[in-house]
Each structure stands twice: as C-alpha cells, then as structure tokens.
Image (cartoon, rainbow, N blue to C red; front, side, top):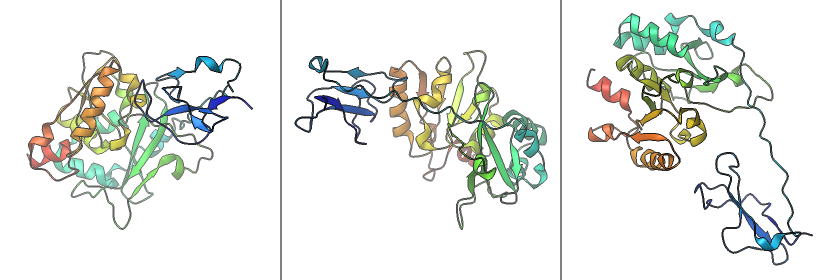
Amino acid sequence: MYTYSLDKSSKKFHCPKCTEKTFVRFMDNERGTYLDGDFGRCDRESKCGYFNMPKSTKGHYEKPAIYLPPKPSVLDESVIPKYGNNYESNHFITFLLSKFNEEDVIRAIEQYYIGTHNLWPGSAVFWQIDHNLKIRTGKVMLYDCNTGKRVKKPFPHINWMHKVLQIKNFVLQQCLFGLHLIPESNNTPVCIVESEKTAVIMSIVLPQYIWMATGAKTNLKEDLLSPLKNSRIILYPDNSEYKDWNTKATILTDRGFKVSCSNLIENYDMDEGDDLADLLLSLHI
C-alpha cells in the first residue's frame, strides 16, 4: 500500500490556482486523513494544470491513471438542409416576422441555420456549430408564435437533436450558439446572451455586432469561451443574473480574456428572467 495517494472519493475542493471546485487532495493512507496544505491536483488539467505533490512522497506515491476524455460527437452536415425548410409552420419564425421585416428575418435564418422540426408542430431547431464548422448538436424548442415565449406547459418543450435522432453513444460537448460566426477580425465585438432566441433577435436589431448565446445561465464557462480568447467580449446577462455573470467576467479577465459585463437591463423595471430582447421589444425598438 502506498503511503500517499490522491483521494479516490468524489469529494472535490476549490483549487488554489483556478478557484474552481475541481481540486483532489492527497490522502495519508496510514492515517486515513488529508495531508495539510495545498497538496493535490486540479482535474482541469488542460485549463489549469495545478499539481502539488509533497516532497516526502518520492517512492511512496501511487501515480493516478491518465484520463483521456472521449472525443466529442458531431452530427452529419446533411441535417441542416434536411430541417432547413417549412418555415411557414415554424412558430419562432412567425413571431420574428410579426416584429421585423422579411429580409432581416431571412438573413438571420441563414446566418444561424435555424431549422424546423415536427417533434412538436412548429418547433425550431437551434444548431450548435463550432468554430471549425462542426455541428455539436441542435436544440429543439417550441415557441408561442404570438408572444415569442418558450412553451413550458404542460411540460418544457425542449430536446436535443441527437436524442431526437436516436443516435447511440453520442458524446455531447456543447459550444456557444453562434460560435461559427467567430469574427476573422478581433476588432468586431462578440456579444453573449443566455438565450438562443435573444441572440437571433439582437442580430437583427444590432447586426454590427456578433451575437452568441450560452443556452443556459450556468453555461458561461471558460472552456466554452476559449475560442474567443482573442476577441473583445461583452456579456448581457438576464435580469437578476448580473452579479453572477459579472463575477465570472472578473475571473475570465484574470485569465487573459478581454471581457466586460453590461448592467444595462438592471436599469429598467423588468421581470426576473427578462433579457435584452424583452427589453428592446418592450421599448418597441
């Protein structure tokens, strides 16, 4: 039995270097206790790489097996033209056409390759296409064609395309919605919101910027933003999420990103969860 080894349980601590809760501490196997100090390894090997091994472990340390994450799966390119039709029945497109002129809506459809699916009649497909133009997956969602809000009753109408297509052993590794639009010039600001719907709407309202979406408030992560490290990034969080996203912006800045967080929506009387698109539509912009 080795004197010391990395803890084999699932318990994680905050890493002394990157502060993420991905730190595995060294155990004293004779005493059954953690070693004092910051001795351990961060699981974020490629993003952080922190590894502090006690000097006295030489010859007494059980080396951990090297973990190689599985290669992410991708969808075949044929899915985009296959589902890139029937827009007259797409509730999300119907909503856009009620607010914007047809030319601008068509441009947005082509820019983001928005699709249509009959999983629920009128559903829209938002593809996650990475910076290498690989289709990581698609998100199928149903919207109310009058309000532009997602249909959440009697259940949330949302699903992944790889699940709809029943692809076995699919390894999902998400990317930002709109990442394929990554600018060739670093001078073009990249604006990031939470909702795919909002990214599409804002691309119509303010087309001089590149608009992307995390797809969830918890998806504002360094690995998803890493392809944009050389770009100027502006975050536009949903109402009531500014504090969380601004904290993450500070951490990302410390790690070399050029990122700022806007508190624009906090200056208006909006409902919790409302976002930039809700604000602009309420102002009739």
